[in-house]
Image (cartoon, rainbow, N blue to C red; front, side):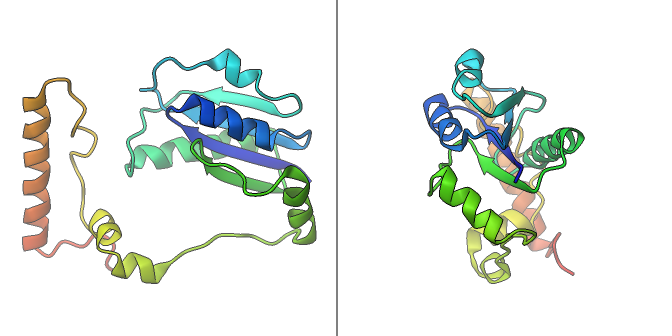
Length: 179
């Protein structure tokens, strides 16, 4: 079975290299999108960390946690691997993750469950977890501007403006995910 691993990474290169060594296998292709804001990317070390897998590295987007840019980076990876595929399975991962089983158990599981999809959606959690509800229900217009500047006063201005925007949306009963 052919597997494509789509990894978004932004730092902690030692952890990423451990992950890459874990998933290194002849039938595994690896597609990595590294945040364009990342510094000191050890590209040669990343490329040389595997013996069997093919690695493709991209740095197209500046990725902001919880922002639309994450979706853009992931969609970009899907488009790239679709051109090089098809694959039996696509695995979306963070560069901060690790496999919980070895490649033999991993491959065996997917062979035994060939054709099945494994996607989880927790609607209850989305409705009842206040942090998830806050992040999804309201528009975060300035999230890519907050905490991005070396001058504290600029960050404070954007944080204040973001909070005002959120408060106004709450007062107006804005809910972007309703219905």
